[in-house]
Length: 348
Length: 269
Image (cartoon, rainbow over all chains, first blue to last red):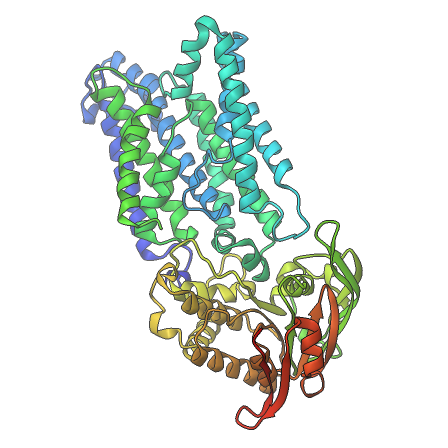
């Protein structure tokens, strides 16, 4: 009956409310945890004093705690939450347009393109100018996307241009070429190979408010596009021919959503390296609760993705004795969970 | 967007003029001239690969002809927007595979998509149409089940119901009964026939079962190797010589009292 109710029916509204409260709680909890423990109440006070603009109200809180929370932990926490949300949203979009519940933000090789760009920047030693690695990563992702679109923009059937099959095949081909390219760069990198490898494994260490701004901005734009086209995406996920006969301009909608999903993935990878399984797993877990209707799946997935990735990052940053790359942790946690969902048959 | 049917002189009417089409080098359709009138049930028959589905794709605008033109209600098809076409033609396609676990009711409600504007939800009329169509097509019984958990025939019925919900003057059936049991096939064909008779709709159906087609159709179109081999009223073209020529099988055709139509028998070997 979900289809019949308005875009955000009460049940989805409730889930979103609960998740946003949980997310806020996790942000505060995460900000208090770390090498230096800070009380929840102090974290709340620091945040509220900044939000309200009165910096000097709480005399009891040390300057050190202030700096740690506002300049070190919160940028990292918020970037992480935004990236988690963006990856989840991107996963929802890709699973819809590729008609394939096993697609994820990296299926079309966007991650390989970003990784290639980043490796290139690191190899040329552009890492000194700190923004240039993410910029190169982003450029690599964009180039990959446009090449994949170029490859799959063929065929006479207007409903089948940019069809899921041709997109997936083009993505696989391009990703294969790029990963060979990455291997080559690693081979020639000598001492910098460890920087490359570490970058590829993903990390949220030393993120700034600039990262927060960029990812939140992209997330907001992506969310608007996804909600506008949510119903068309429902139809596209039934197959191009059916969607076209039901009045969806499949080529245009697919292109818009493809660019949106890829940009979300590209920004995420550029900011934090390759973090797997969030974009694959979150839409699946959420679909168990909301059903496949994208008008419910999209908002809930965003919060679930943010919660999951922030939880994982908090574990690696504050709980484990040594920080391990977040990409490894999400794969180690996400892989088995995915196996469990898959074995239960909830996907097929 | 005003619906064209309210304007006089633009009744449902599809017209193909010298249409040719090729996917690659080899032409799939050559010089097709056909005309489809309202209030008639048309069936397209022919061996595999003769261009039946391609013809439907051209008629609904999924494909554009290499030469010639398709007219829908007097206007070239490429001047129609996808949404306008979806309000005029509904298609029950061969592909009824659905990868995502939508409920049956959600899938059928998708038939109302062209009538519901972007951010609004279905109104009372949409819900009424869906409920009555689901009752007629025997899909109400599993309306809350997941479409992915249904059998092929049941899924085909849901897709059929979805197309009826589109409430269009023209309905295309592309082997819509290929996985359905005989009782549901007859039931749905009765519904289609009612729609043609009472609502003056046009139905164009691709069939493999020549005898079913002969019972239900007003007009048969035989295709062979991308050309129209024979086209005319069922009584006239339901003919052993034509079927033998098109399908290369030994055939006898005789009027059958029980089914009240000409029926074909085939000789083994």
